[in-house]
Length: 384
Image 1 (cartoon, helix red, strand yellow):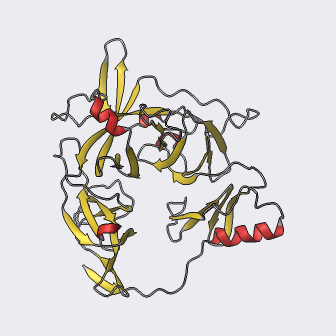
Image 2: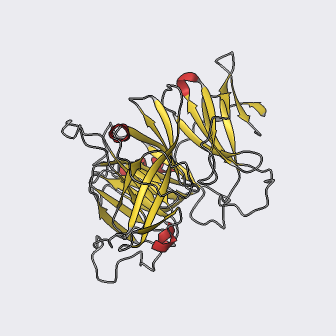
């Protein structure tokens, strides 16, 4: 592990925030949908062109305005002048079944809108009041929020997976722990206690390169690691099934844009009726813990993936290895480091393994760790 003193250079301001102020000054009334309670939200990503990973791009959103920019070039401007619909969340998601570039997904009250880099759009009505979006290994995970009036206190909060922008959402079942035999078929949970617990699970992280989801249960004060499994019935009469993580069978040549002349919000294609998705809990924290403020993906020296849970009240990062397949024993915590914050970064050292990897890059981790003097902080780069 190497440690360096951290010297702040200047305050970082998103380019979208400055552009939004200019737009408000030049276009009176464009601030509609943006009030004092609206917060600046932005994220950086490596860009839509995987062959040009030499720069970051930015998506900024506030109220009902969304700005996607690359350096100082605006790629997409979704202004409050065009709509008064508030943007709850914006994420980039790569739909494997669509076989296209990553799409910009905007969550609005009651609907989801997707935009491609070439300008295609699609709007999908939602069957629930979704509060969060999570790009996953197979598509886009949507999680329903808790009932505000308590009318659904006895109902389970629903989670859905969008496999293709032009398909219906597929409901995800919260299931019991995996069977001890890797080839045994998995079944949705029938345990009332698990269903009760699932209602209180809040998603903290979802893997883009791995079919795993991390949740936190406030009632139990525990983190859990879940694996997304799909069950495809090959013969509805015989009832045969096959467990798989690969949903390439859905990659039919569905056009991303509705046919010429069709309305933008064209009816989505139905999801395959023989598909069942389930979240299986494969690890649960042994001790009570505050919710992790950050969940960071990184890799060890052999290239095996690790998850780092940063709990700021404890000033601690705890590492958990991800299992490689269904036959791997349940994971256990590997090490703990002192940290206030962490971020995954593309490492420069070479991997020691030779087989092809699913991840496009090897990820190290930078830690912001406290010292005895609170006025000084260091960034550490563990080499695991």
